[in-house]
Image (cartoon, rainbow, N blue to C red):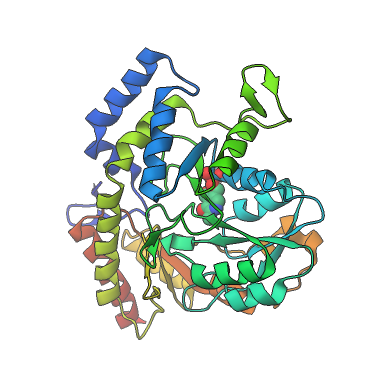
Length: 377
Ligand SMILES: Cc1ncc(COP(=O)(O)O)c(C=O)c1O
């Protein structure tokens, strides 16, 4: 949505969920009405159909929906039998949910550094961190770009590890011609409202080529039961509700179109932002990012963000404090400086406005503001 400041000024928010809702309002409203009329609030046809459609979209055999992306990760670990005494390797440059899920499962998160160009997990660092306790790697396809899955799968195979894709930010991304979600042992998605495929509340899913694994997760997510009052194990209550499924079914029809629009904005940014002044994102040749976020690196970040804000351009930081430096992980006793690239990028990253509904005028406002900042500083 274009918001006017003054007669000549426009504001460019970091994301705009209203604009997207308006563009599909009648379909969304009738999906909500249909679900309410059917009273299939938990489970039911909408959830079943969405799981099937999302599995097809990810080019995998099976999908189970869950309550959110954090639960998706936790439930995969649990279904794989990963828990107490086990180590799971992942990055500290991610949203806390990735690591929270490991701890929730009772396992121990082991943080490794990222590659400076892609800001994604460094396969060499993964290999160096493997011990006799390592059971799995969580590869986070951060900002919409797939990790180097060829390397990671090769490492996993040689060390008998599981690979879980954290695809919370990468619905529809490709690498080597394959959709994310179809590359590891299982992949986890979040449908948090601001994601590329976002619900109107919390939601998540696990997809896999392993149908038995998905059935186990389905059981764990539904109080450990296969039949109404017959519980195989103690599980949890983590289900996508019917309303969210009906909304996601509408939005799934548009995701490729929306991802293509994100790509168009990314190409324009890459072409017009001053690459001699800022570090632009690097996408691996084999990867097709879905540009959940467009993240550049700058010096004097605060000053840069303030300048843009004064011109009506809102930015974000994903994420300002790496997990190993968070108060929540001080018990791991990982000292400052131990993940140098992670720590360096955390001080420099800035997310620019990125969403399908960004208009040409708004995109130019972002580009002109960045260029004008550097011509004045
Ligand atoms: C990389 C990553 N992993 C996991 C999650 C957790 O998803 P949720 O918020 O649906 O629990 C998120 C999103 O919030 C995320 O960005």
